[in-house]
Picture 1: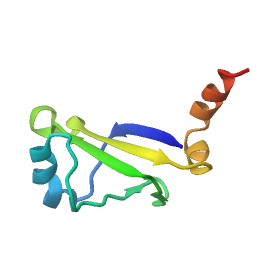
Picture 2: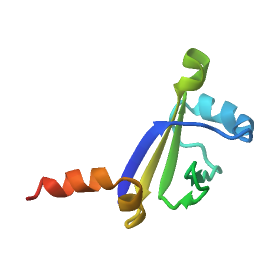
Picture 3: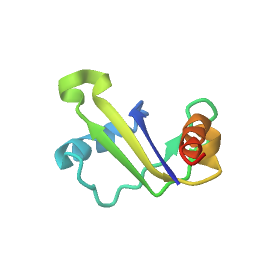
Length: 92
């Protein structure tokens, strides 16, 4: 299993949940189940959890970050082969 994080590029529907995300300041927002899609082909990334940090009030669009936790194998290896290779290299 792996973890990935980076800049969040929301779809228009994010505006409906954005106030709750900002209000909870990084804590879990109950009743929300997010899906993460691969931008270039639209596949859903199966994972255990998704976290969104929204500091857009202070930093604009660059203040949005997403963390995707528990990405399973083999998808993680497909998406991030360089990370898997670096991890495996530690044990050689």
